[in-house]
Image 1 (tube, rainbow, N blue to C red):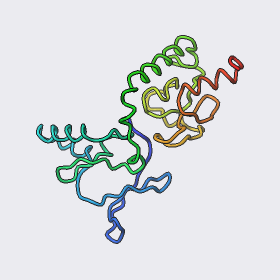
Image 2: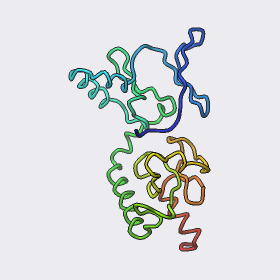
Image 3: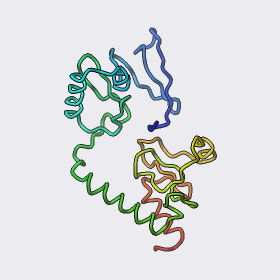
Image 4: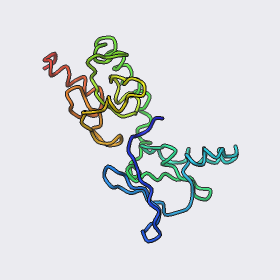
Length: 197
């Protein structure tokens, strides 16, 4: 499925404080589970009653908008739903929501123009893609070549890694430089060919 590719190891050790935690393999960061409860992912797998789902929707609607609001980053303890991702808990995006329609429209239109004007860099099957590797976030890593089905590992071999999916810059451009979005890759592409000065 979709989601980031970071891997975690679950530790359960009564001698450790807290006794249950996940540790990220890439940098050793921890997600501590200091209270009893369930991730929303597990809770949904248990097929909760409609009344509980209504309660969850109400609680979700009252939360701030966090960056990584996925089912594994929402935790149900008792009757309370909470956001637990330590990487992004301090950053909320509610103040930017009024700009979301315009920004999404602008980025989508920009991608469409690149598809028309530079299909070899941004078309459905680009031969010389603007983006070598991007995040799973829609639009941010647009204009990348899709690997053959079931062949993601070989497509990634030999490519440098940008930062993780939530940090910036996280889009690996055609020149193997990390930038914020495919728009930045397009600008660099044009500059390197001296199309713009």
